[in-house]
Image 1 (tube, rainbow, N blue to C red):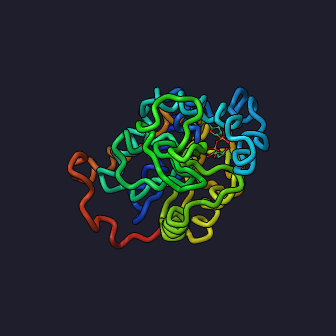
Image 2: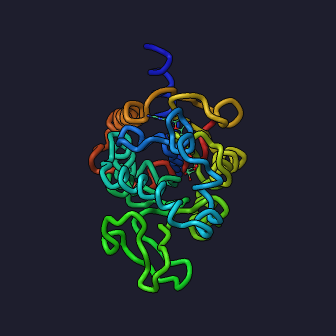
Length: 273
Ligand code: APR
């Protein structure tokens, strides 16, 4: 058995044994759905300067310019479909092995894959709000125009969190609440360069959780915070991990399609790392 396989089994055992499991995802999980990430070579922030296109003050001073970047992003997101990683996480939730997905992504692909409990830490691109009169629109209401406007005549802003904007309070509170009470945190496809999302794994670890990370390359978390690092593509490794959890559930005589019985781990706290 190779080292990766050994670690997959170890990670599956941790998820199985832990009472509350939380997942934190970043752009890397949606790369194999056709959405490029932000900071890998060719990523969005290599082609667009963050200060000129990614901040709320840039949007306020020149919304039409920022909409060039936003509409490119929107075109790509509109065509994307969930990949095997999103689907595997939805399966893990159906089995009762995953409580909540915290995502930094604005693409809605976890929900499209069937995940029911998703916290959108950086908002979403399905709704837009007028910063001036606060009227809110669904994406289908504004059509495919490059820079949609409100009935009041001003530019609309998608409900994604730009740099300089606050994280929605409910998402912030629920995410840090989940992080500080979980037994295991699975971190998938984030470079962990943007706070406060990047501090979620640190908070979880300090509270006693085991941190499992899946990424193509080591991130800022890997050496200090991660306990089990699984290096590779999310669309391969997440299903492989979930398959191993399924094998353990099967070995325990549980119907893997019927869900893990409530309280199956009632006596387990966070497992030892
Ligand atoms: N499988 C697994 N990991 C991958 C894959 C893949 N197929 N492709 C890329 N990755 C990894 C990269 O190695 C990198 O560590 O995903 C990570 C993507 O990092 P970023 O591009 O920085 O994306 P993210 O961490 O989600 O960015 C955080 O920054 O610009 C803001 O608001 C934006 O939510 C975003 C935030």
